[in-house]
Picture 1 (tube, rainbow, N blue to C red):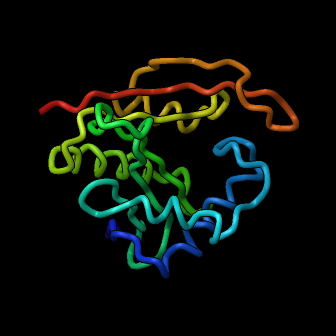
Picture 2 (cartoon, helix red, strand yellow):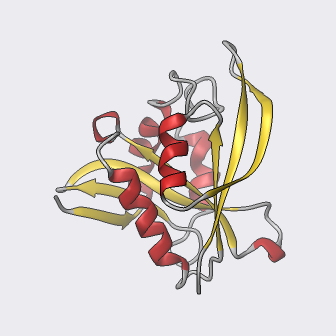
Picture 3 (cartoon, rainbow, N blue to C red):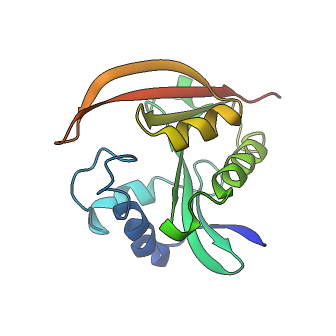
Length: 166
């Protein structure tokens, strides 16, 4: 199996949005309650850059399988060394170990991007993602109970963190 992480280009945004939207109905991954549009994600897309806050398209054996991004935390200069990592996979790519490969890639590139801390923001009922992050050395740094009204239930958010050794 050959896994490639390719810096996203504008023409990738529609499939990135489709992958994101595919997770909304589960109420497990994102706090969006309705599908988003390509236009609504343009500013988010533009905030990424290959040398600071990358957004990668993930291909497995040449087939688009999802995306991973680094997002700035809190937007102030003192936090430049901290990013939130987001991983969204196509349904047929989930549960096959690709999330672990994504986090390994994230760890690997932190040094060249001057990132010292990775964060994961995960709903407290998303057991698959929580288990993956814990298995990869993240620790629970905060729990915000019942912070998200997901229509069918109020859900909590767990903030996981991992310091990257220099």
